[in-house]
Image (cartoon, helix red, strand yellow):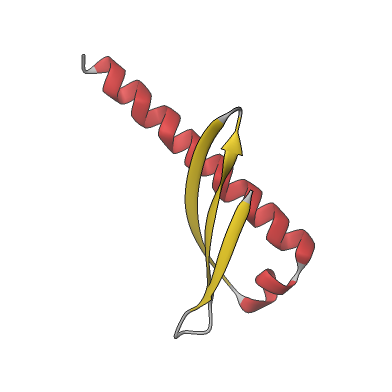
Length: 69
C-alpha cells in the first residue's frame, strides 16, 4: 500500500491511497484531520479501511454490471 499526503486549505489532509488486495489494484482518497494523519496507528487503520472500502465498492459495481447483461 502506498499513499501521498496533501495539505488542504481547511487544514485537513488529503490522502491518495493505492495498493493491491488479493492481486487486484485499488485506489481511494481520504480526507483526515492533522491529528489522525500524525498518529501512525490511526493512519494505518484509515489507510487500510479506505482501501477495503474501495474494494467493496468495486465488487458491488461489478455485480451490478454483471446483473444488467
